[in-house]
Image (cartoon, rainbow, N blue to C red; front, side, top):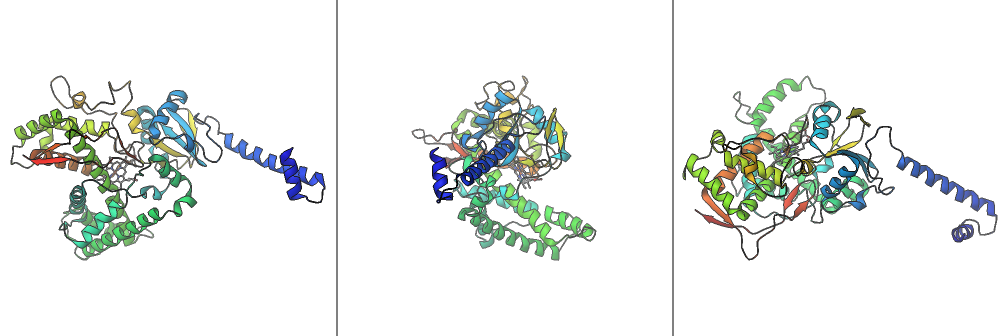
Length: 448
Ligand code: HEM
């Protein structure tokens, strides 16, 4: 009644009450239609929490949305639906639903919701020299060019990556909020800065592409050369192909491959510093197989089961992309009896699989020995999916695995890692966003 009177005064100061009533009815009908659309689900759509109209489940997500996802998966099953803002999402929470969706139906789920996913906000990194090393391995392997550490262009590249962080100090919510509400996203100066970073990275990559195109070698010495060799011979048959495609490809690789690997290594060094007993066991294996002065080779892995078990456990224990990168259904598809319409975004939850209590005993503890058989041989587990699954899984997986092993081994071969025992950093706190990184920490590094 009070609202009726208020509207009546605003809309119809001179008095004809039927106009006011008509407006009120129209508003109610509009709200009813909006609510109906909000509540409407396609038939056989995965069940899930309803959320709040317009916002979906965003207000209910904590800094670590995996926790709510776990709760909802217990209530609604391993595949549930939710709305983030106005967008429809399906969340996959166990191994079977990930394989059925992303591997068995890979041709239906090869889309990505938005390239802007790669762009988020800034936080400072702890061990800067580490990112220089990782970036240089990338440049040597992929671009065929190693930079000196005082090279201006190289330092600009690294600075751009430092500004290109995929986490937010306040956790996952601001990340998903920005991805969901484009208008809000565009207003953020930090995001603009990230765009400028991307342009700078692309500028340097463009120069490397130009230099490499001028002197392509027949022998494939690095990925850039192989790519140019192949792409130039087929380019004429691809409509609309330009050099910018090559620049975009290597820029994406650089952004996708540098921060991820650096952060995974940071988790690794912190874990080793907090578990000196495992660190000593890895070092003993290194001394036995490689020696104090030898250089690690990838072929050494077969003789180093415990080191492999530590790295496998690290990828399980601190999965860098707790919710992987989102995919989008490119056509209507039925998976495990559920209909998923074209355009639905899909998030898989590797972090939920690696903490599943039916698969892992004490999943929240770091125990490398769980990857060894009774004879001490390394046993790889299909349930650890840090690089995603299916056709859009991580393009740099092999390089990442190789680099993880070599950098990890070379570091422990030469240095002892520890922390200030009076103020030890926590392994349980990190920053969550597209990727999950440890909070900045101090490490004590002693040469052996
Ligand atoms: C520890 C290191 C790394 C982790 C944990 C990681 C993880 C991931 C994950 C989870 C995805 C999404 C996969 C999916 O949708 O199923 C991905 C995609 C991608 N990664 Fe990695 N990655 C790492 C290192 C690298 C490196 C070193 C490179 C490049 C040299 C790289 C390049 C890419 C690219 C280009 C994509 C997008 C692939 C596509 O959309 O088709 N990543 N990565």
